[in-house]
Image 1: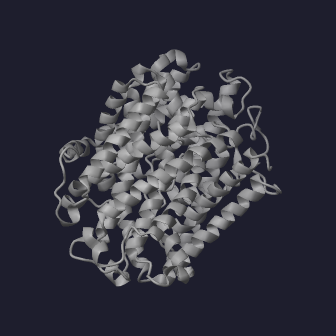
Image 2: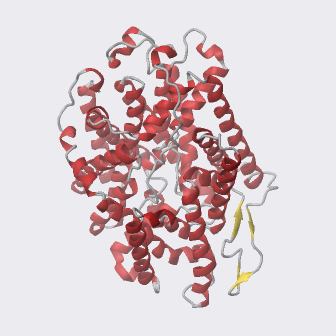
Image 3: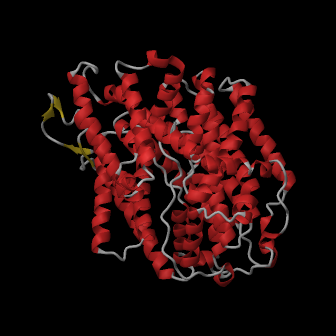
Amino acid sequence: MPALPLPLPEATPAPAQTVSPASAGEIVSADPTKTAAVGPREATVRAIIVGSGIGVVLAAGNVYMGLKTAFIDGGSITAALLSFTLFSTFKQLSRHRPYTALENNITQTTASSAAIMAFVVGVSAPIPALSLMGRQFPAWALCAWGIGVALMGILIAAMLRRKLVIVEGLPFPTGAATAEVIETMYVGRETALLRARLLLLSALIGAGVTWFRDGHPAIIPGATMLPGTILGISAASLTLGINWSPLMASTGMFIGLRNALSLGLGAIITWALIAPRLVAAGIIQGGGYGAFVSWLVWPGLGLMTSSTLLPLLMGWRSIGRSLRDLPQLVRRPLSSGASSIGWFPMRNLVLVVSVGAVIAISQSVFHIHPAATVAGVLLSVILAGVCSRAAGETDIAPIGNAGTVTQLLFAGFGPVVSIMSGAIASGSSSQAAQTLWALKAGHRLKASPRAQIIGQMIGAVVGGLVVVPVYLIIVKTYGIGTESMPATSAISWKATAEAVRGGLAAMPPYGPAAGGLGIALGVLMCLCAPTRAGRFLPSPMVMGIAMLMPASLSIAAVLGALVLAAVRKARPDVDDNTVAAVAAGGMAGESIMGVIIAALIASGLF
């Protein structure tokens, strides 16, 4: 069960003067799908190459980030800023033809498609969950299977585009924000370059701290633990302290003060109050992070499950509207003007190949009966539609909900079928939502949807080829479910599979009661969320994550959020886009350097 709906929406920028693609160096026809015929093409080689390069970096970093924090960065605004800065700094790259807003849009589309492949392929949750259960699969199969799932999600989004983006005009705030950032860059060049420089500076600081913490020479401690004991257990054994993690500090900035404080509250309740009493009562023998998590996963799972399923049920009207979108998936959209995706024969061929690959690999490698895979694919189509509409209406795609529902529905067929079916639903839903965010940005920029779909598919292939090798390197170096790599989402997927398979017998002493209490608290907080008092309550989902994450990591996120709050109080002129740039840089810096260090260790150079 994924810990949070991912990818996270990025900060919405302040209103700014806009510029049309034409004024940014592009000649636009009345029909946006025919832009290339009268001016510079959108899906140019340089736009695709730069987008793929940025996507490789973001995808690799997101593997590390997803396993360590249960969060990932969609990266669309990061990619737009970096590509704009690249062509603005190295002017010889655009000496003969300006790098236009429409090319920038293709670059961010390609990069963000690659960036989320860690989640689409499942290496942040379902695949490591199966690994924790002793199930290993070939790297080639995971790559091919994940790319097939991604292509399914892209095509679902392409077929829903006219209904959700054109006819109903749903806001898709992340997509609109990305378009506004791209438009603004071509008006306020200096402001855009400043944000990009802050992003790069933050990334360099994050990478430097990580190198001197985990690399050579290791002169920065991994964490500073509190002295003393609680009920005879040292604070260090309870992970109580501050982890010097730029990634977690930046994550605190990114998720906001309420969610960061929810992490901190969950950490204090779990590790300072509950954990030492588990040892004192003899429920846990010996202590240690792994021993604690094997029990704490049950109340944490209760909190996360209730906060996943209840909002889905409470949003039944949105689900009903999404079911009315299904006819769009079985008939061709109108092929007029901006509504056209076009190239239907290729669309059908890609759909057949991707679904066929998912079914074939599921049978030959995962040993799942084709009928079960087909059922999972059909269910994922419905759930991807639900997530797509939710992303359009609220900017939050309930991807975790999709995975959880599917996992529970297939629970009777064994853990592999249950987890991989959930992975199909969550992966295709994730890519569908991300594609529609990108298509919304393109619609605002009057871009060619056909060019964006090409970029989206290329990004999915590039990202799919990157995330599996990076995952294997990280697991070899840091392990899974360890204090250095908590993999909270993977632990929750594994616990869900074990609970529905083994029932109460699979739980430790007092585990069922703790799980039931977690469910009850999660339901209560979700029901109170829409009320006036709800804004003062913590997030049950985030508190569930805190129960499975070392307290030192949660405290680092709290400190990051508090520092940001202090800065914004002192400097009210600091806008959301600047904050997003600094936070994205810090997250990317540690994630990328963490992958580099892992590769050096795995190769024997360290």
